[in-house]
Image 1 (cartoon, one colour):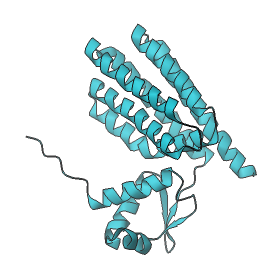
Image 2: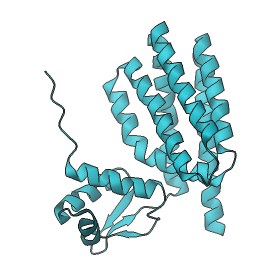
Image 3: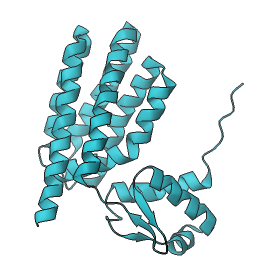
Length: 228
């Protein structure tokens, strides 16, 4: 028998604050005050302090002596370091799916892809915050389905650890470019064709094109913000 422990209070606080950072409600450089958060959420300062340590490990805040926690800044160096590893991990996940798939598995995978396609089509554009939230959620839902096909807990845990930082860059890219969802739709079409054909090279190439496109978008937006 397996027992699943409920998420700790600190983890719940970390997810709440993390989502506010990812979506830009809390902006880079803004202080996250323990006392204020504890009062707003009616929790102890100790729980908030633990949550901030979790967010520091996820690269969403930086903690300084005597200054406390500050929302971290997305820098070109951080973005490049993130995508260098994330793209490789996604390619590994894709290859493992093709190695271990069955007809029944692919039916579920295509259903997850269709759900993401529908969500993309329903998104009004960069100003549609709720739509962007649903797109990001559907994208990670597709990735979680792939976890089940591969059954590699180490790969799953590693990719999940990247999720907050990657989600943050997704929001930046989708809010900054009108064509962001169009590129995602094209990527899904290429992904579907590669999986249907069992073409590992085509799958790898599609993932790399999409990842590099996303990287360039985020870097361009950061450059615009720097020169503005």
